Image (cartoon, rainbow, N blue to C red; front, side, top):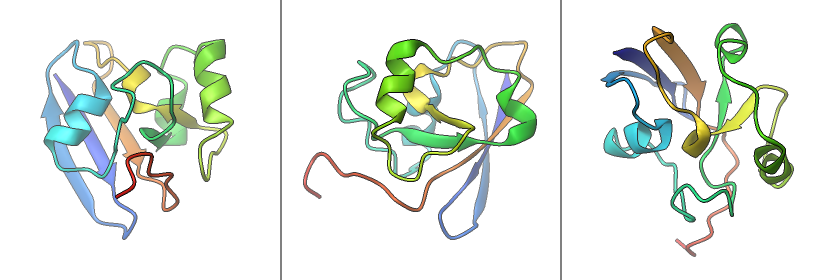
Length: 110
């Protein structure tokens, strides 16, 4: 189990517990976080962009070149940005804090 802490655009903090093997995008969407995930995890958009807390960023496997390319398109990307669809929560990750960026690109026109 992984404790996931979501920091909303307004600073609100929500904590949820996720099963090992869960994809962060699905955990976020189940919690009602505003991550669109238009491409459904196919790395064809950047609508599930999150900013990982600096202390947790190094605990994650490095982003692939394809993910880095998509992050170049993400609004408000930072050094610790990742795509939530590419983060698998494992037993080695006891907790993870991510911030929902204030800027988003809505690909579904909502």
